[in-house]
Image (cartoon, rainbow over all chains, first blue to last red; front, top):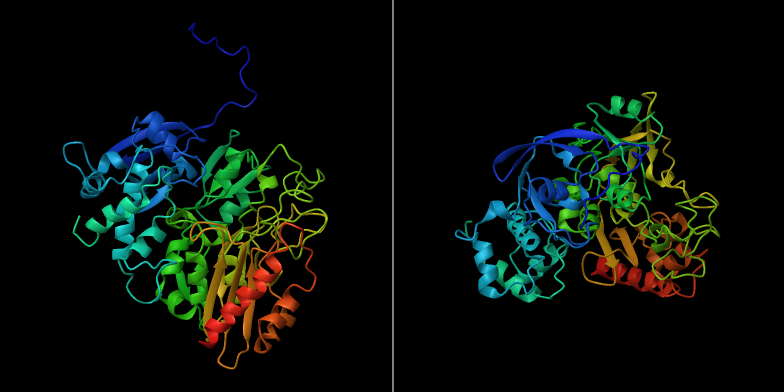
Length: 185
Length: 315
C-alpha cells in the first residue's frame, strides 16, 4: 500500500493536547494526549497494554474494566486526562503467564471463557467484586441492607452483571469466582 | 468525538465562572456525557473537570438530615451506613441501577442530570426534538415500548432513566447549586425537572453554567422503604416501571414512579389514596396517561407493581 498522503488542509479545529501522569501496574507513566483519548485508548494505543479490551466502547459490555485506585470502572467511559495521579491496574498487572493471579488460574480450571475476549474485563471486575463484598458494600441481591453481604452465586451474578460474555460462560465464571472467594489473594 | 479543550476546576465558584465560556460543560463521572460525546449527541468545545472540588462528603445536617456532596459516587452513597439504615429507599434505588463499574464512577449530581435513553434521541439519523429542537419526534408512531405514558407531549415521549431520582423525589430531596455569578440556590426536587411541553430539550430548571454542589435530605421519614423495579432482565437494565415508596404502619405514605414519565412521577392526590390500595393509587398517578399502543402494557404493570409494593409493606 502506498503511504497515506497528508491531508490537503488541516482540520479547522486542531486537536487539543493535555499532559497527564499516572501509575499503571506500578510504573509511573507520563503522556501527552489529545484530550479526547479515553483511558482505554491510552492504555491500548499509547502504552501498548492490549490486555484490556474494547468491546462496545459505551460502558455496556465491561470488556474494558480496569481497577483505578482500588475500584473497578469502565475505562472506555472516562478520559485519560481525568486520571492525573491515579493508580491503574490492568490484567497485565494482576498476573503473568508464569505467575497467574489465583482468579486467572480458577478461570482456566473452570473453563470460564470460550473466545476469551471478555475475560480480562471479567477478571478485573471479579477481583474488585471480592474486595467490594469484603468491604461490606451491599448489592441489589442483598436481602438485608445492613447485614454483611454473603458470598452466594446470586450475589456474584448480580455484581458481575456489568460484564457481558457473548459465549455464555457465565455459570463457569461464577464457579471460578466462587472457588477463590473468601481466600486471601 | 469533537475536539475540546480541558481544565480542572479547583472550587465550585471557579467552575461555575468557567462555565460562562460558550460551549462549556462540566464533567464529573462522565459515564453519560462521554457516551453521548462519542455519538456527537453532545459536542462541548470545553470541558470543566469538577472532580477536584472536594464535594464528595456525606454529612449530617443540624436538623437531622443528610447533606450529600454532588460528587459522592453512587456506590458510596448506597453503602453509607446512615443511608442504609434511615434512607433504605435511596440505597435500594441506587443498587437497582446501572452496573458496579458505572456506580463506582457515577455521581449524585450526574445521576440527576442523566439524559434519556430514548432510541431516537440516540439515533442521530432520526428527528428528535430533545436532541435537535423543532426537528420532530420519531418516537410518535415509532418504537415506543420503553417510553413514557404520563407527562408526555406531542413533541416528546422520552422517559427519565434514573432510579436514584425516584427515591430522591419520594424523600423530598433539595438540590443545592451555585450559578456563574456565585449566587447559590436551593431547589426542591419536585421543582427541579421540567415536563417536555414544546421544549423537551429543556429538562431541568438549571440555568446555563449552574453547578449542582449538593443534594440534601430532610430528617428520616421512618416507615417501610421499598424500591421495586420491573425490567426486561434481572440486572443492568433500565426500568419498564419502578415504584419507590415509604409506607407507614397506618397505611399512609409516599410513592413515586420511575420508567413511565419524563421525570420521577409523584402525585399528591395519589398518595392520599394509599390506604385504599393499589387500584386507587394507580388511578390517580395515571389519571392523565397517554399511552401508545406499544407501551399501554405499562398501565396494568404500574398497578400490579404498586400492589406488590403495598403487599410487601403490610407483610
